[in-house]
Image (tube, rainbow over all chains, first blue to last red; front, side, top):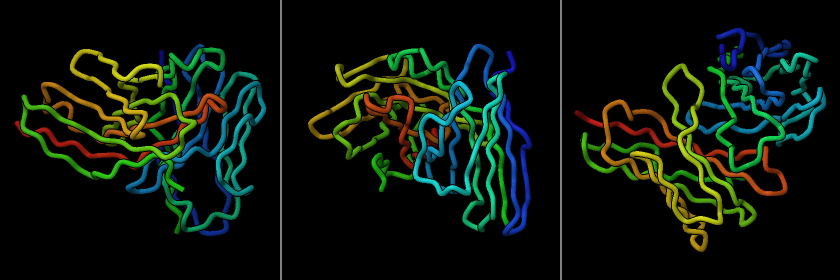
Length: 117
Length: 113
């Protein structure tokens, strides 16, 4: 079982550009959540996808968008990049129907380090 | 608005002693809490969780205590081992939005041999 995988590992972009990050969930999981972790901070919830729809969203602008594919993999897109978008982007997968008493089912990938110059 | 706070950025403990990591929250609707451990270049890994119907949950060397009236939780690691050196995050969710987790800023634990 490969667990949660993310690509690329590192990425350097210029202000104003667009970026796409990818995530493959753990086998058996159908829900993908994206988090942004700035340096010295905890992960901040961006949004969550289930059944190819955005189910929940955190306090992030519309420049952040996503997609989920029929195989449950997901993409995070960020348009018009700002210097402040530099961060570690984490993907977490879980099973939507698993109860909260099994919250440990949310597994994180290693993240994509995005640097905006 | 930081709804989950970890006010100690770092903690240093001697091997074999107890490590106590603290976490405070402001949202009274939070009723489920988790602790994650994160090593460099890896994603956070789940450690232990607690529901608000309990005030204590234990798993081996790890125990989480919840004080609902104080909106405070703590993670105790006994005995601490050098391999426990990592960044620890607490996270919380509310019943009405249970798949959305709010994270603290983390505490870096260093266990000295």
